[in-house]
Structures are given as C-alpha cells and as structure tokens.
Length: 125
Image 1: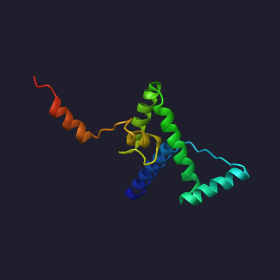
Image 2: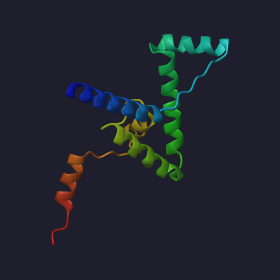
Image 3: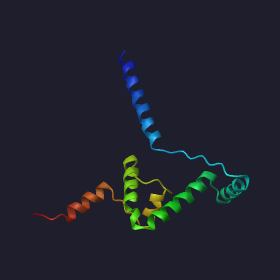
Image 4: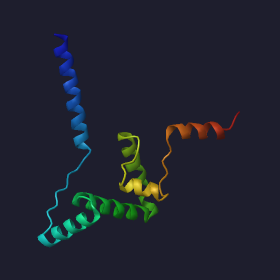
C-alpha cells in the first residue's frame, strides 16, 4: 500500500517539475517561404549543422552583439544570467550569454572561487 502512495508522490513531483520547465520556454514556429527555406537548408548542409542550429546560432550571436552594444542592457543581462545559472550550473554553450562570457563582456564566478577570493581579500578586524 505504501508503494502506491510513494509512486503517486513521485509522479506528482515529476509532473510539477515538468510544468515548471514548460513555463520557462517559449516555442517559436517559423515557416519561411520556399526561397528562404532552400537557402537555409543549403547553409545548414554546407555548415554541417541542422537548420534550427544555424538559426539559433545566428540569433544568439545577434542577441549577444545587441546586448553588448549599450550599458543600458546591463540589468537585462544580469537578470538573464541569474535565471540561467539558477536553472543550471553553467551557461548553455552557444547561447547569447555564453557568447558574452567568451567575449569577456560577462564574467561568471563559481562558488569556490568566490569563497577563495573573499577569504584572501577580506579585511581582518
């Protein structure tokens, strides 16, 4: 009998986590015209990537360039970074935030290095 209750609890937790993950994503469905679709397919074949990967990379690099173009975007970058790091321990490779990090615009410090820095440079009273 307890197995049934435990199974139900685990199932409910799994459903709740799936709902939370679903709320974090937005799906965009783009259906390009025939000429654009052929061009995109050609670029994908030549680059050895899927069409969606080509589009995602281009969007990420454009978003990173736009975000880095003005100091007015700092709060948005910091908020997005904080949300991304709460969901995972690292930034998604190829994402706009990862591009900013690789370019030196964004610096992410892990907990170990932060503690070490605080310990080394804290003022002793």
